[in-house]
Every structure is written in structure tokens, then in C-alpha cells.
Image (cartoon, rainbow, N blue to C red; front, side, top):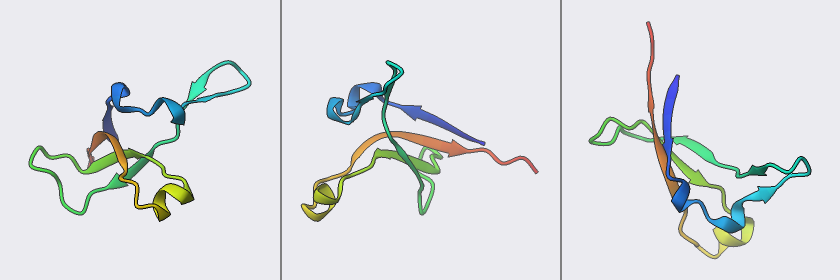
Length: 72
């Protein structure tokens, strides 16, 4: 289980898509961190980039964090 927290204020408005059903969606990527942060966060959440943004070295937009909980 991974508990996540997303800052809605940081979501770029141009990345929000209006679907045919009238609802709004945004694609996000949850990526595991190499090492946990000093606060214990094990994952980071960011908005995916277009090919042009990646090739233009546009900085990623980070919008959240996550912590993985494992039960043994």
C-alpha cells in the first residue's frame, strides 16, 4: 500500500483534460525514490512530460509524495 499526498495547486491547468463524460482528469507518474527522504517518503509524484518538454530539458513538475507501507 502506498499513501500519497498531491498538491492540487501545483497541477498545471494545461495538463488537465476534459473527458467526454464531463469529468476532468490529469495523468500523473508515481516513481520510487532511490532512498527515502528525511521525512520517510519513499515515492515522488510528478506530471508526465511530452517528448518536446523532455528534449527541451524542461524541469519536471513535482506535485506530491508517497510513503509505502508493507505488511509482513
